[in-house]
Length: 431
Image 1 (tube, rainbow, N blue to C red):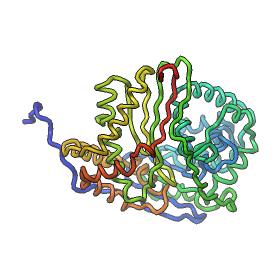
Image 2 (cartoon, helix red, strand yellow):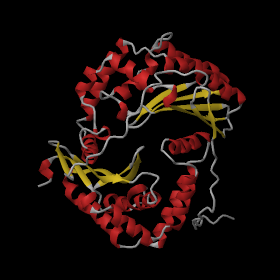
Image 3 (spheres, one colour):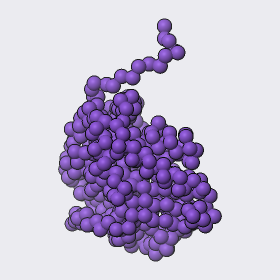
Image 4 (cartoon, rainbow, N blue to C red):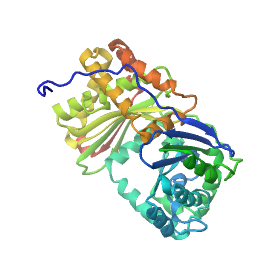
């Protein structure tokens, strides 16, 4: 009989079975990754384009182009597009970041042909109607004005500007005026140059058979579309500002937003997997040191975390929180105290075992189901020279890393002189 008074023992799995995608090069050159791992008659298509904000010539071009793809095509109005997707039980969404633009379609298998007929129009033949663009301008401007009133937004923008500079694509942010200056010709040009077959990887996941595969190839794999002559520019040189501390004054703010971090090595670097463990101990899960100290013990904040943001060319380590204004300086002090502990005190075996178990559990969950597998595999192919060995290296590092190795990583990567600190809040609470 199960003894509910005793928690089950933690067991670190010896092996994780990683489902690999079938890779196909389509006649028009598109790379198609197929994950046949579903049990229900549903599938998901992810179209990943090298079309993030780093490639745009005017701010918000990338975001606006993807947002307005479903607002009208040469044959369909925005209302007709939404109505047809709804009729077939399909769902279409978009997302953009600094490196990539993505269009995702969820569809029942029996209506995949009809759904892809609509999506083909959306991707290949959008018209960006002026009326819809004007609505986007007005709403976008107003939303940004509201966002810029938040201390969290100010601290985040200062942080990336502090890491990369105001002119680097990773450090540039939109201003309200940018929405008013956005023209239809900007979107047409961006679409023609970057939402193209030779800038695209398609990931097909779910319960996949020959019918689903052939439907995708028929709609998107036989002929090319877009400007094939577009050349992706090299990643600009980063001229990191000398200044390491920034403060944005927000009069009468009841909270202060804090961001502390630095540029990190990319995912190919030998230290990366160890840094994932280090980050988790510091602030990467609910039982982390930052949460126990600053939330549970001190009560300065509702939540605090640290994370590693994966960009195509490098990674970024960042600690983020919002604290009561009167606790700003105290919270900063405790953050650096926890960083110093990692640099000077070995992590206990009990804490390290807990973190290892947590990370391996998260890795197992990232391969639970076709769509989760698709997300994990997509993250591999978004980066140069990464393959399935990366997961094996991650598992090995998690299982074998030692307290002394963590101390070394902390001293190598968490030096206070290398950290950029950004605070946004009321200056009256910093005196």
